[in-house]
Image (cartoon, rainbow, N blue to C red):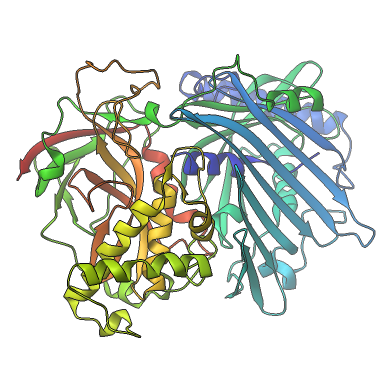
Length: 591
């Protein structure tokens, strides 16, 4: 039996930017008291019939078919093994393919934990001295998109954590302090859930780590929802359904477990993730069925995960590229039960945010290209905005070569850069000239613009010259850092005409991914996007290397990230809860 596989599905939400039968969770219609009574009765019967708790970790593997909106898109594979020295190794892989615009992306995520020997009588128990290491010897994460790969491995030597990140070109090594909180490795965390579930607990909270969120302790909360049926690979069986929440991860998840037998509360039958573009379901199957779901099939219409998430306006913004400022109202879409209760957007770059005076539950957002916002003292002191990382590998030779291309542009503009300069010594005008020149370099350097890459590092993009907005944003941040300009990446929304793309600006598909006729009326939409900010003279300057112009008022900032190795995708989490749930009204445009 394999560990719980929820993390990789969460990453799918971030990088593409419940009922167990492919529809929304049914908790609102369930008689809670009746379900709790069923759970108590089942637990009492199981305690009497199943005998003692598991004496050892089951060593088997499971295969699951993954569907999105009932369409097979790939598989999930989990396994647990024990080495001769007692080290327990748990592995999870999810391999899926989806459409992003007119391109098909195949992506795979793998996580591995190696934990010190797990022995009874209480399998989840861990000596107190090992608590801050979680009983973990190795924690690893590998993500692959098309031909791009990023790896992360954490080990626990002495009194520190050693974080090794690899972007396909070279390794980055960081030494980090051990957590202050005691936590459990993945398998022990699952065994602790099993222990409490088997005695009838209805809410289980466990402290653990998730590699894709970086080496930090998170709370994993599982809440009993109801009794249902699920497929066990051979037949439909009774299952307990749990709502699962990871702290600071605003995504709705469910898991279903066996209610009878020796592996009750341990063997996961199904995992569901409520996503804006359809319900993701990983259902137990055979290996043959699971692998078949990942095969290319021209007759299968894969879910489209870009244009279906656009925020449509009532009317287009006229001449958006010529505007100096815009004021909009942003709120949660009416009737959206999946969004956060409180909407939060940051002030930063050219964006300023305050409470909407006409609707307190909404936010007013002004984007003014003449008024960049100052950086906070914490941001000014943050070394992550200058240091290289696996994704923003600013010391890579190919990245440095791209960064040097800006010199000729600055000279052509009559603002040559002094030899051996660093950003802190440049006059503001020259630092700004350099930043805008680097934006122009990246825009033209990435000549193969498409949605098939998904998430490449700066060094990979510097060698392939291909990608979408993520590659533009990451490479621009890297070349800025390479020339001594602190930088970070931004995620949020960008204005495009109906069916248009920030990649090419053309109206070639509508919001559902279907071809749009040339004479289709334009309404204007916001699509999910990434760009870059440069820190110059104490203020953040927005720069978009994807677009033809350096930046427009048609951007809404949702969050920023240094993309340091230790943070992984953690800084993008707020975006996950907002996709498909926003409503935007334009109040005014200044030219």
